[in-house]
Image 1 (spheres, rainbow, N blue to C red):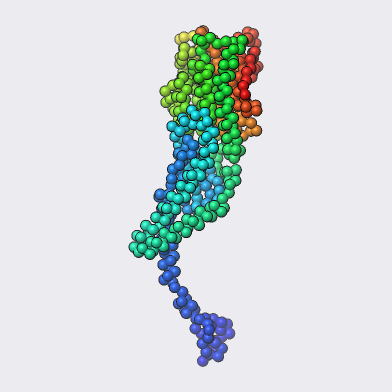
Image 2 (tube, one colour; image 1 turned 135 degrees about the vertical axis):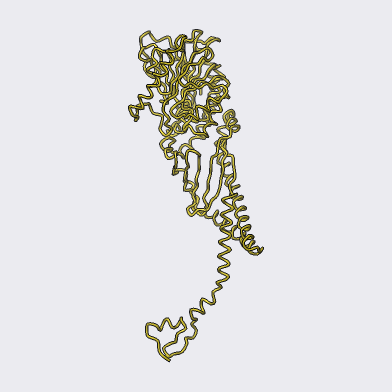
Length: 527
């Protein structure tokens, strides 16, 4: 028998060839024999069943795994989707989403905050302990939601795999195997997620959409979350002190309001802080407020979901006069106007409780920018637009047939300049700190409010939270401003409410009060 070439001799051992002596090799299987022993049909059936199980599992997760859960005042939807990378995505429509590196694949957690529930939001605001309770139960709400999601996702995954297997094979054995495979896969996925869980993921969120600007606006999310519980607990304690503070200041000898004195509460820049509403209600009730005036930035982004926040205006039970800020959109303005006790001013004059009030909204809509004074990092054209709305309001006031209006409202203090001489008092906000002074003619007082919402969430970034500020203005029978109380809640030390009473007519004629100062302050505070 012909011998094989040297280079072909090793191949002959496996390809049915001969050895050097021309005989067939012993103890060595040929290629055909080796592959002939592989149970290809069984392997194909196993891989086919696995593919059917995975497909049914994925269909089940996409169609029926989502579950709804209440997280504080929010209605949230949680869902699981197959993923190579895992992670968690928190969607806040229409603002964008937060991506958290919470765990590795093969399951991705989706959390969608759909909307604020009006009933629970009102309950949160009206209950003195509501904020503290909500902050403590939020983690439990999320944990309960995730547990419910795990059970539901496992059930629908098994059911989806079994249903698809029943349609494809029509045999109970394959259906049972499909269910077992789906259960094994889900247990493995959850085990991987648990084993790779990263508790520090909240410290390094990745923002997408409009929320890409959130780090500069909201600051560090973990720092805010860590501080909010402490802040809310302190604030609830302080709210109760406002009433006793009012009883104290009524006995001060400097100025004693008469029963017929008109009392106006000036607030500004709430910036979505729900804690502000509890303080406002306490001040309105204890100081016997007749009218609340808001100089803008009641929201942060002016989005549709934020409409639920302004619903608390109706709980104050007194007229609420509002002008739009640069963080308030047309949607926000319409939501405020829809409240039964709200009056929105946008270049017009109204009479409320006998007081003639003019107002105009801010011409900008810049929700992605921090609250900085106009002109700081803004173009000359933008500054001119801000000043121009003051000119527009001055023209509107000039066309009034009756005497000069008693009070004018703008958001940015730059808009107040053209109103000098058209009204005795102009109220503004925007700068997040108080300033009191005179405009060019020395006859018009400009009062700039701080942030009644403590600058919103960004106010929790510093070592101490930004205090909540508001002022009570006292007008006599002739609608002249006689005095005002500056109220500060949660200031230095986080454990006090401070009030300083200022008498307006102590300023000599022609002498301007320096910004941030006022004649004869009479401070009072309670811890």
